[in-house]
Image 1 (spheres, rainbow, N blue to C red):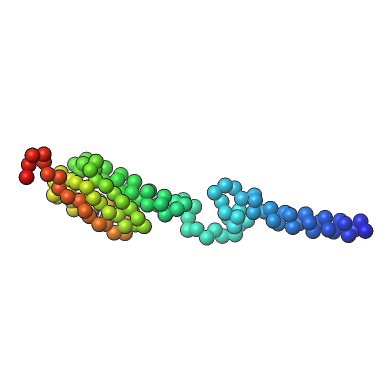
Image 2: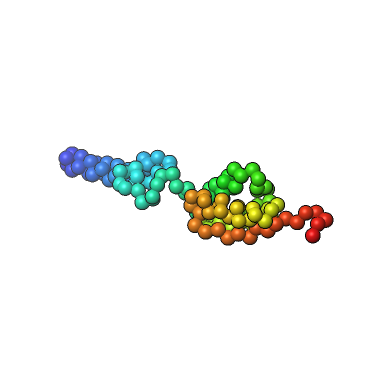
Length: 126
């Protein structure tokens, strides 16, 4: 009788340990990564959601434009969605329209650029 109870307890303990093995995964880590199984995601440094990826790409485009001091980026809006970037707003010179688009195309992760930039007319001018 005691050997049957010991076996039942051993089996129960094994099942409990197997079921709780996934609970030992650290925060931000999937159960398969904690158990040593290969993770399904491409890289650990990738943003967690498409929204975060879009925000990161948007910041990278702004940073690239900001490196060019001759361009006033204050009136430029950047929208990023899945690698597609849309530029809108105004620049001070017509030559900057294409320049800003080329800068955006050079940012890693940008797959296409839609350029809706216009030249800002001076106050009182035509």
